[in-house]
Length: 288
Image 1 (cartoon, rainbow, N blue to C red):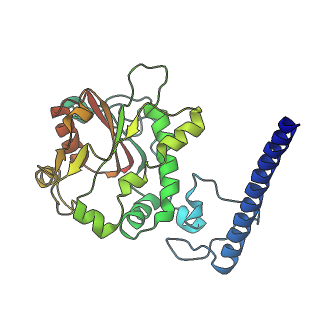
Image 2: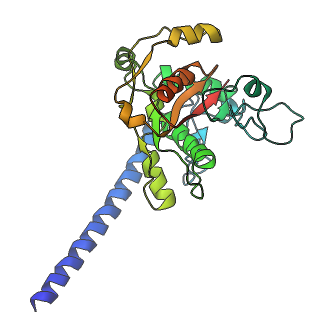
Image 3: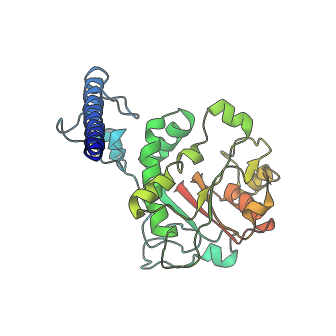
């Protein structure tokens, strides 16, 4: 008799939990509907109100239509598609039919083993990233992170290969700049990667997101407008390794928002390789 009572109690608790979850979901959906009525979303670009096609239609989680109107999106996202350089990831000019190593990488092989970018830094992306980075448009973060994760799966997650990524390191900010901005945009681009991976592969990955191994010890002036040589000089001594044992023998993937000359990721790679990293690659949201 006691066993049946325990089973009834267990069933009752499960039913109550499911009912509570259903009620909570309905309340959250209702709150979102009310919020959209009283505080309709505005385009980050032109500030016009965003109108959905129907009350049931929701923007795709990978779509920038959550944040920009159709007129602003007409500037184009410019995703990087084949053919591109197999080393630095730059889009190859028209006329090339397949991926291959570009002339610049043949002439001077970069320290980074492989670089991949989701977008070219043009069109709506050229406007969206500075909004995200400098104007605290954090509603862009989920879209950017989701798009970056898809690129990660495409270029760096190959279960059939024995070698893979051991550690993901978002390029760190100097502490003073982190306090000033309030967030590290590179970290926001990867903070849910492990959760995304579990949902996609039904298991957690072998790699970790490491925020401690690489530190930015020197606050550098803005890189905007500097030449490649000036950027390299500007970044000299900017990074340090906290615990070399963390990176020794590891295949490391650096993550950043924009790659221009590659000076930032290149300086970080130089230091990581000097302290025993097996290889260093980079994944960025956009490249110029």
